[in-house]
Image (cartoon, rainbow, N blue to C red; front, side, top):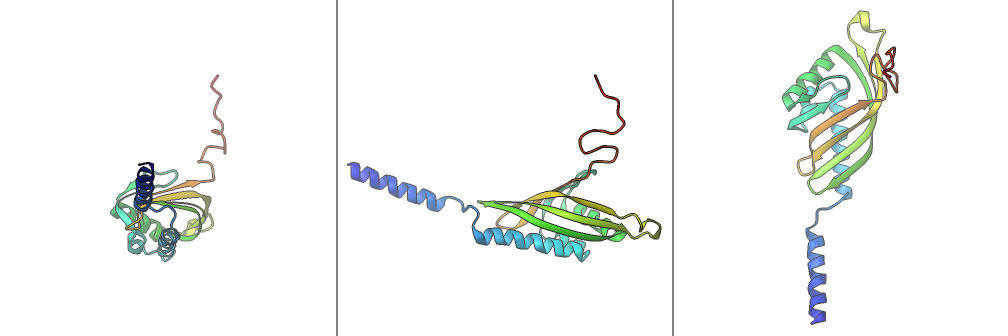
Length: 169
C-alpha cells in the first residue's frame, strides 16, 4: 500500500510540474527582447504605426511629468506628436526579463535626447536618463503597460526635496 501511495504521489508531482507554467524559458525571454528591439527601431524610425503595432489595445503609457496615455490610438497620437516636434536620440538597454505563464515583464534603462525641431529651440535639447519597464502577455507579446522614470528631479525639485520651500515644523 505504501508503494502505491508513493507511486501515486510521484505521478501526481510529475503531472503537476508538467502542467505548471514555464518560467524564464530562454525562447520566451528572447522573444520579449526581440519585441522590445522592434519597438525601439520603430521609435527611432519615427514610425508611429509600427511603434504601436506590438501594443495591446488597452496599453497604458506612464511617462514622467505627464498624465497617463491610455489606449493604442492615444499612444500613437502621443508618439506622432513627439516625432513631429522633436528629433530623437535614444539608447535603451534591457536589464531584466521575467516570463511566467502568460505574463512577461521587462525592466531596463535608457538615455535619450529630444532636440526640438523649431529653430529657436534647437540649442536647448532635453536630455534624460532613467529606467522603465513593461508588462506584456507572453503569448501575443503585446505590451499592456509601459512606464518610465527619469533619473532627473522634477522641475522645482532637487533630487531629494523641493527647492526653495519653507520647512514645515
